[in-house]
Amino acid sequence: MKAYEFQTKVTSDGKIEVPDAFLEEFLRMQGVRVIVLINKPTDAHYDYEEQAWTRLTTEQFLAGYSDADTIYDKPD
Image 1 (cartoon, one colour):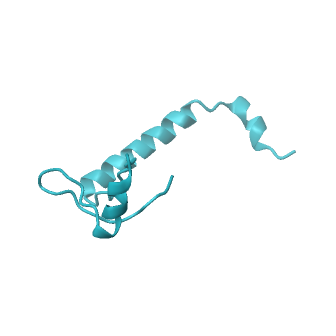
Image 2 (cartoon, rainbow, N blue to C red):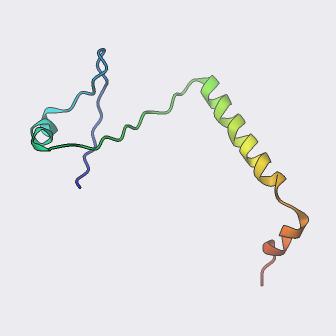
């Protein structure tokens, strides 16, 4: 399996534009596997939500930690 990476946009009709440099080879393939990565939004609401989820995850993880677990914190 080969991997190709390129920046592109989604058209107004919902299609992903494939650069001409890759198009010819893609058309010869019987099938392709597509993984879509999107840029992280930069608005303040998103940052607040991400921080809230991180805080909640940390709190829930530490809630399951007991004093008996400190045995693993000590060096041998």
